[in-house]
Image (cartoon, rainbow, N blue to C red; front, side):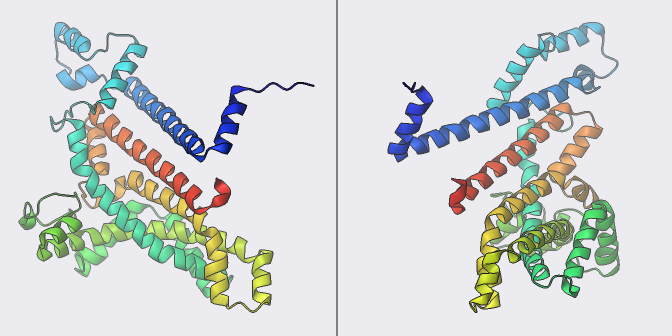
Length: 356
C-alpha cells in the first residue's frame, strides 16, 4: 500500500531534522498571524469610519458649505471611489504612518498620539505595578487561608472592584484625598509652574524628571499621578487577586501538593515554589491582559482627573466628530493590544516547555 508524501509532510520532516527550519516556520507563522490580525483591525476601523452617522465632508467644511465645495472635498478625500479602493488607499496610508489630520488640533493624528499616549502608558504601568505587588500576594494568601478572614477580605476587594464604577471612585478619591485631606495634588499631570522645565525624552514625566535631576518636578508629578494610578491600580488589584486566588486554589488541591506536604516539605516552599511555580505562566497572561485593559479602559479615569492621555484625546475627538483622531486612536490602542498578546504568547512558550 503506497503512501503519498505531501509538501507539508516534507516541511515537517525538514523542520524535525533542522532546528533552524523549525524556528523559521515559527517566525513566519507569527508574521502571518500579525499581518492577518492587523488587517482585520484595519478593516474594522475602516468600516467604523464609513458607517458612523457623521459626514466627514461636513465635519471638514461645516454644514453651510456649497454644493460645489462639497463635491470637490468629497473627491479630494477619495469618497467618490468604490469602497474596496478606499480601503486599499486607507491601508496604504496607515502603513506609511499617515492617520490623517485632526480637525481639533490641525496636527497630524500620529503626532498627537505620540504626544498623549505616553501619559496613558505611564498611568497604566503604575497601576499594573500596584496590581502585581498587592493583588498577586493577596490572592496567594487568600488561597492558602481559604474561608478565613483574609480570604473574605480578598473576595470583598474583588467584589468592590468589579461593581463600583471607576468614575465614582475617582470622584470620591478627589473629594477625600485632595479636597479634604490635601494628601495629593489635584487634576492634571503637573502644576502649571513646572510646565516646560523638563525635556520630554521618554514621555514619562517621572522618568524624564529623574533623568534631568529635577526632583521638585518629580515629586510634583508623583503627587499628581498617585491618586489616578491608585484608582486604576485598585481595579487591577481586584482582578489579579481574584484570578490568583482561583489559580492557587486549583493547584493546592492537586495530588502533588499533598505528596509534597506528606514528605515534610516546608509550607512556604510548597506554596511559593511548587504551587505558585505552576501558576506563574498563566498568571503572566492574566497580567498582560490586565495591562491591555488598563491602557484601553482608562478613559473615564483620565476624564475625571483631567489626565492628558489618549483617553481624554479620544473623548474630545468623539464629542467634536473628529473621525481621523477617533480612528487613529482606536487603531493605535488595538495595535498595542495585539502586540501585548503576541508578546505574552512568546513569553508563554519561553517559560512553559509544554506550550512548544
